[in-house]
Length: 337
Image (tube, rainbow, N blue to C red; front, top):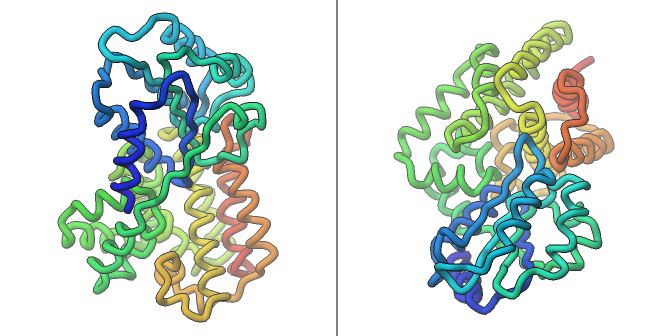
């Protein structure tokens, strides 16, 4: 069980000093939850002895490393240790990594460096060799509870079965009927302006990400029935989200949801028991069992989306990538003739 695993980690934190740990999962929100629980529940640890580093506009820059160095200069006053928590370690720039290596190699004897990443394999070998890697298990019991609680409305919550920890927890803790009503509000809509507006509100809160997911999947459904000309003009309208969102964050989250859908398409087409699999959410929602698809194009598209979802520097043409995203999705299923 996840809680038992977490409790063991928290207890063991009292034995970690002068070391560097890297905790790895495929879910950034789960990583943040674990980081928060460790900082709150570690016995004898004062909040004044905890420093949290997170990306600024998609990257952890060298200024953050300088802050860590300053934090390491003084011994703890209120506790017997200090902890530096680094969220999204993979987003650290090359310059910051080079400056950080020395700290990683010889952390002070009172210091625990606790990094979190969803892209362990993207880290430099020189970085990985200095960390003790700990894998974070996803609390799969939550997905089972979600599927059971909404079994009568599974088609509505299907897109969020593979979403992040915070979204699943939020949905489980919310009133069931209110979630169903929210989902219906999106899935009954054919207004693409409404759907695009809900893609542009941001991703900083659970409610915003939930709305993004519902809007994204409904947008795919609505545009899949359009002519090529209407499809092009509608996708062009998505570009306006750049006025209100962080471009890199938007592209990364767009790519993540695209990967989820394409993965489910494979499950649907290649698995004989896809209707009973927890990870077939999008396939169940879209009915992709009735669509033809090109497995090579899907594979290439997933690889492209994976590069975007792991990007740490905004080096992409936003408008081009938005167009490419939706045209790639359409091409995967022969929707454009």
